[in-house]
Image (cartoon, rainbow, N blue to C red):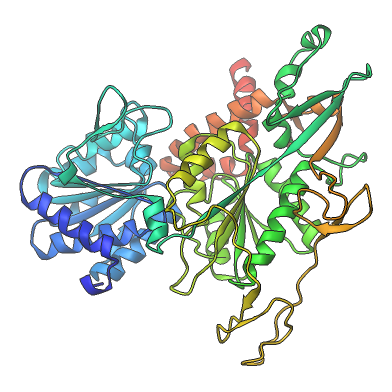
Amino acid sequence: MTLKTLRPWQAECLNKARAWFTSKNGDQFLINAAPGSGKTIAACTIAKTLIDDNAIDRVVVIAPRAEVVNQWAADFDLVTDRYMGKVTGSDENLTKTSMDFCATWAAIQGLEEQMRSICEGQRILLVCDEHHHAALDASWGIAAGGAFEHATYTLLLTGTPIRSDGNASVWLSYDTHGAIKITEDATYTLTYGEAVDLGYCRPATFHRHEGNFKVDPGDGNVISISGKKPAVLAPELKRIPGLESALNFYKLACTPQYEKNGVTPLLTGFQASMIENAASKLDDLRDRMPNAGGLIIAPNIAMAEYMAEVIEIIEGEPASIVHSQMPNADTKIKAFRKNNDRWLVSVAMVSEGVDIKRLRVLVYLPNAMTELAFRQAIGRVVRTDNSEDDTRAYVVMPFLEKFEQYARRVEDEMPTSTSSKQEQTTTKKCPVCSSECAKAAKVCEHCGHEFPERVVRKKECLECSEMNEICAESCVACGASFLSSFELSLNEALRVGAIVRGMDLGEEAVAEGEAIANKVRAQILLSGDEKLVNIIRLLPEESWSHLRKILSTS
């Protein structure tokens, strides 16, 4: 990798970081650049320059996930022609090696003493990817702060420098308004809007998926709930334990809907309508990018499995699922990156730093509802594939005020030359010769390539029986609204939480279990105890709260 092959912003960032580090004014530099713009390559080039200048001996990279660590090792070798090892919290004798290496933030907790010793004895460039993970009062931030206190240089990378919880991050100072106190000479910023304008990222279109849940409590007074209108309960209903909490629009949107048999997914339900809309847009995008893929971010494993089942029924082909309880999740992500499959369903696995350039459609039903998580999710579907890529990303999300605010702030960053509306194309691109062909063409008239037959997705208007595009908001013939309305009984509305391994768990227990699992899992993995590791892989994270109660009473 040379200066000639760097993107202009990467070359500018390199020169600015090099000047700052060599000026002796400071040992920390922040790169705040949009997801997909090329932060990793920029950081690797800075590392190579410092190595060539004989300013450092070794490079240490901290990244959020094992999959991202693997990508760092590959890119570092490409740019520097130096091997980068991948280490875990149980690795020993790192002080006796001279190699560059990368590790997850969680692994650093088990390597703190070794890292401190390395930094005291050698000139180290520390690269912190997705730096917002390192809150000062969180275990990761405390461990990293102690381990790398004496690093020669620190390069901080992020697309979201301020954490959603408002906590400060290690190595950065904040003013009383929460803004980072860092000199202009020690930072390089590239916003998402700038990245789109320069062609590094694709623009995103947001579809706020509306739905109206109608719950019949059995007294003839139907309760209506939507993203715009919260439930209004009669006084006698307010006394039912958990009802007010259950009748939350987003909670209902994240609760599987079934036919009366309680087994078959309801194809007229809210989630199915989201998938139908997203599938139609994916069809459109595949006219421009034949291998375009869709990502569903699900709030929990049960919901992920449900969404995958809905996809298979609607599309006739299975979706790949990845979550923390799968021992081969990283392998599945790698396979999806290379194959031509349409859908990947993820529970907290395809997040910051995971690079799958063919992803273009996002169905967003997350567990974490922060702006940080929102922007990181958008970053998965906006990465430009190549210089010929003229697609747009498409996001389907529940119509919720919080998501609406996040989306508007993203749209406000867009350059004036970029319309927020989805562009309607009248042609499709031949994947063989790149010629523009008619939408209805079965064969490319230039090279003879046969286009795959497109699935026609239509829905019938219940008022006049006219057939409409699946994502139409109203009937083209009579104007009747297609605003989705979903009817539930009181018992169905109260059916929240999850049934896991025969345990009927309430929603609070599920959330508590997931929180416990996220905290404890890293410690068990770092212990290196093979038997314990195998146990936690089999134990669903939703059940951890229930398990803790059993153990505490035994």
